[in-house]
Length: 141
Image 1 (cartoon, one colour):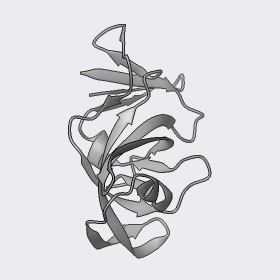
Image 2: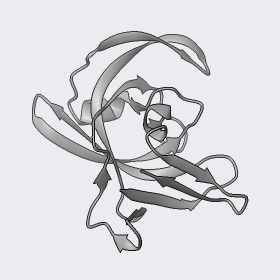
Image 3: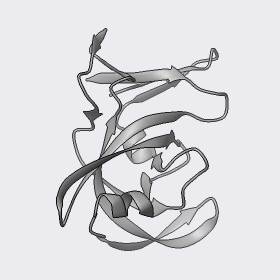
Image 4: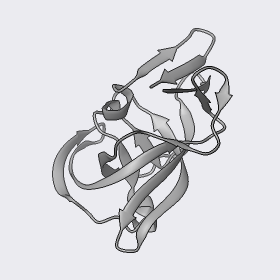
């Protein structure tokens, strides 16, 4: 089990992540910024990240988004949290990114201003997300 945490700005939680995926050229990884979004059902990556990782599309599905209904391409990828955020059982530090134990089937989306990955409730619901009045936050898995 592990925990990540930090301080949020009162509007959003942006965290550094490592995205990994298997494509036609083997397993690749890239670093990105992610938004923890409790209003999103599914996690998502930008088309640029999917291309960088050479991910194979799994298909398309109709999605309801804040901007309306659209067809989204689905991909399978892994999400890891940057070692600078991670505490492993107590105060022990991670020696690299810590990945979720299973892959995510997520969709593509248009990048936000500050993030290229959206972490939705498909991931958040696996653990405990705590938001404190001090603007500290923690996600335990």
